[in-house]
Length: 129
Image (cartoon, rainbow, N blue to C red; front, side, top):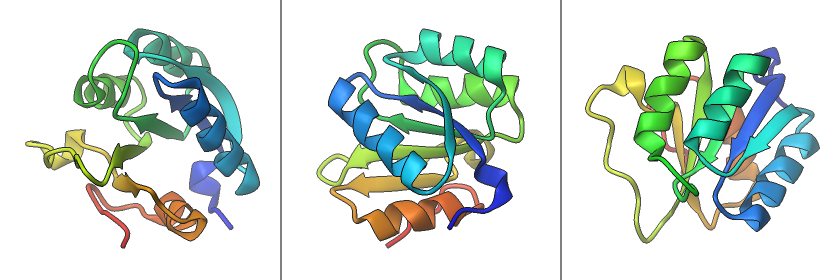
């Protein structure tokens, strides 16, 4: 279901249940999960060690902000694709620099099909319906 551009991923979320959910969805779509982190510092360390093609991060992190994480992650892996998961009740503001923002903002609750579509979307700051 996914393309070869999303073959490995790092999952970042402050909440363990969210990490488990995102990891399971990635594996369902045949994406290898190289690591999981609660916050930005741990995520950046994993990115340096594994150089994945995809970062899936929730807006709720144990430490750090999602926008700073995305910018720092892209400095480490410039071709990194980023899916940002946020509650529909509090969507994040658009990135001031689209090149530094997520490729996809996925609002929860979402359907499995929307997650699959997010894996296939390549444009900056797209939000699948």
